[in-house]
Length: 80
Image 1 (spheres, one colour):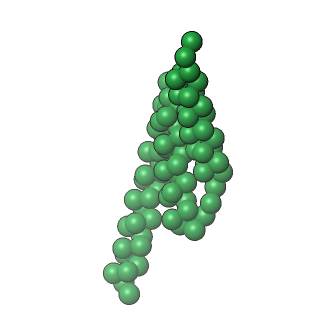
Image 2 (cartoon, one colour):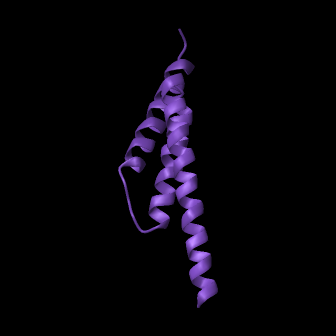
């Protein structure tokens, strides 16, 4: 039982550290206007929260950004 508790604490610490890095990445991607990076990071943040049994609005933000990227690429493919 003690090893299971220790493993759980270690995993939670790693998830918290990952979230910290993802939130830092969001700031950088926002500053650079990197929509692709933002969409990926929001999705990763949502994956961490959902693995813990929580859902956030990050999934909606990620989906909206991916849709924006797809629409932008589609617009660029149109003949002039």
